[in-house]
Image 1 (cartoon, rainbow, N blue to C red):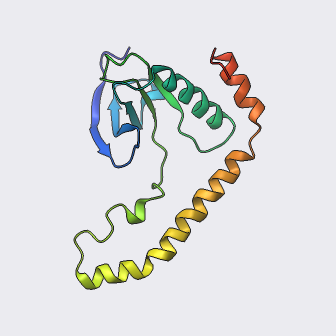
Image 2 (cartoon, rainbow, N blue to C red; image 1 turned 90 degrees about the horizontal axis):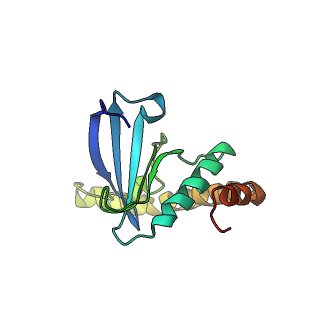
Length: 157
């Protein structure tokens, strides 16, 4: 629906994505909802197409409730479009929880690697603390709001 759209920043694969390939990109000549940094979450060819619909409803409902979940702008369950069902969502600022260990020690000397190993327990503790805090925030949200949104979307709650 955006015939003049062009890449301002071409898709770049982002590390992670257990069950999907994740790409970051930015478009130009698009309406405001699609402007700015975006994420493509592309499911495997055999992924359940209904899952992207459910994930879209969950993420958008969480975002509406003030939880820091990326708002989904486009959902496509037809795997023939890109090779699997997918979502395009806003890219939230910040770093992944695993940012500090993603390329742990790559390109550093043995001495540098030993210093990183020494700091690893504290780094992992911070990651776990952040993850637990987010889980607590998530579980404090009223489930009824999400159940209403899932039901309104025609998904069996």
